[in-house]
Length: 470
Image (cartoon, rainbow, N blue to C red):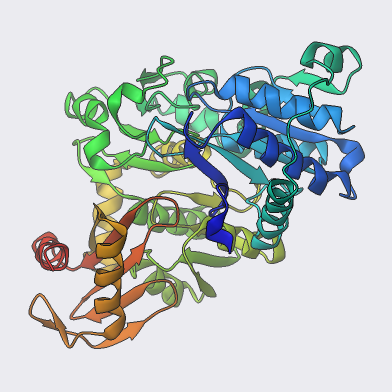
């Protein structure tokens, strides 16, 4: 059985607690499995790109992975410093590499690290790749294969040109300059507050725009004691900066800089749902771009209304950017996004990219000559008010099963609101009066996630209070 193995893969790859399950012995097994997968890849001669985030020992784990692949005869392009996930993805696409690895646990707590896999197009690993990698790992465990006692050092591999250090940041910055109207941002004098959350996005935006203040941009593997996930409770310094009145727009990215949230000039939170909707309007009406829209199951109904008005095809996927990525690879997608802040756009890599999306918001503010709060208000005036919140509840496994069974069984009403319909695409989604509730288990942590959207913040909180006290 899959759960009998100490190493199992989630949405993007493998994540585990450092020194508990994320050990060099287990990392060897995952890296060896990765080598076996890429060894037969049609683009293996173009090598594999490896990058790493700002977590504890991520650079060492990346070098170790590069050494395993290099000793198996696979050329590795290893980032010369901390790099965001989108940087690795971009490098894969530009080098036409076989794929890539990012040593990161994304938004997970500081005690975690992870092994995120990327396919040849630079996007998220599809389920087929993850399944094959996991089978290789389990075969290695069944064979009790151990680390070889003798193998070439990273220095030897570098001398033989099997491992080559590369500047992923420079490549990324040069690419972003071609995709964002940096001149418009600078000429409009847009003042930006950027919260790197001690993550991999630190130091990048200052290379692109004239006026930016970076918050929490120093290297701190403990992330200041918070999870590097840009939720309202984790971005206090950004709220404080925006309430000072010194900035036009603020945004934050997560630990590996592929997710985003924003704060307007009044210090009001602009969640990923509203960011997604704002960008649909901007890309369609002002940049004249066309294509389908893809959203995950937990994203605002506002998107549905916009697609209906614009007559844009809308595809709804289970949660996980890998599903959106597949649509981006196989079709002409204008924009794809998920509730957690992962958004990807046309004419870029089929990947979410927090820094790119943040700068696109800045471009929108500059080009439209409106404040971010005014742009949000404009959207609400057009489509009606949509408010959203999510609560992640940590519960023991037995209790988690009980709660999920009750929602699977079904309910006639929730918090006094009659249930109109249900959809079980991913978890259990209940449609109520001008509102909806989604309940699902996390794929990477011992959590139940409760997602609610309604036409008033009071209604959102009433529903959340009801379901989290069941």
